[in-house]
Image 1 (cartoon, one colour):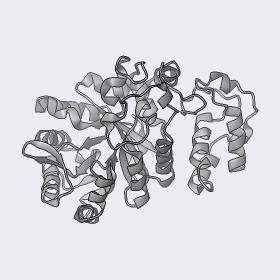
Image 2 (cartoon, helix red, strand yellow):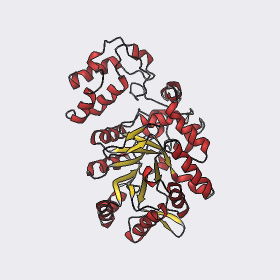
Image 3 (tube, helix red, strand yellow):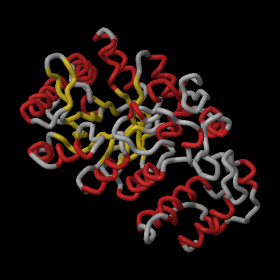
Image 4 (spheres, helix red, strand yellow):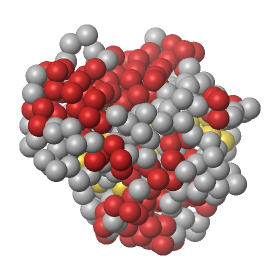
Length: 381
């Protein structure tokens, strides 16, 4: 298992993580064993948005004796009322629900205290303008939550969170289908009435959000990477083609700012399929060929950082150069952090010999040679 820095938190999280939503489907001992099995495979981050006692107990029992080797995303604002999940900012319910989470996790702290599910202006205002956010800061000041995070499906709200300066990481929904759709308060309506004409590559607002996270050192963990399994089935996929777990994991992990993708598991075999990513070949990871052959897509002309452009005769890491160009080009001036990361590359865009061999391999027709010229001009090397 490889591990990545989670933004500027100082935490190193496994590239493949554990989304705990499905734990309550099974007998408690089976789910406890499944979590422990995932941990043996190197997974060290788990998301617990679920308010039900069973799911929380399972995670607590699975971590017993090794709590300090796990990083937990524990959600503040996810409550259990009358046997049902209820999202609220009312401290009458929020405080006891979070205290219950700590008790069931058998822990006196949560690594990542998540401001739960902020998808609209109303959500934002309810959370950020009142006693709820005061409670979050109180927990942080006391060390009960080590870092403040936030979960959202909306890049507009994600950007707002980054700009607060106190949100250190964000749990965000990322997959190729979501990336091609504009921001919405309602995920259920995202693909209503879509057709090819609606697609214009990665939605600019999402791309800007990823760039901002990378620039500011706000870590991203990924939910809904498989679109609830729909992307495994060409009949259900908005693209009309099916992807593999490895391809979707690779897609998420090649977005700027992303540290870990949290997959949902029912079985050890599904854990193995996800963790296989760590030893997968380039061909197995290749999501770009699938996208390029899809009936519904229009990534044409847009770099997706897929790496098809390799090899370069002068060993330029073209995907990384393109990523740094995209991070910098939309800014009034090149951020110093991006400039330093770019300069740290073994080979920069100025070394491009203009052979255009990379362009013949690009599934999306990116004019790589021209981008190398623009990058060299932008960074001065």
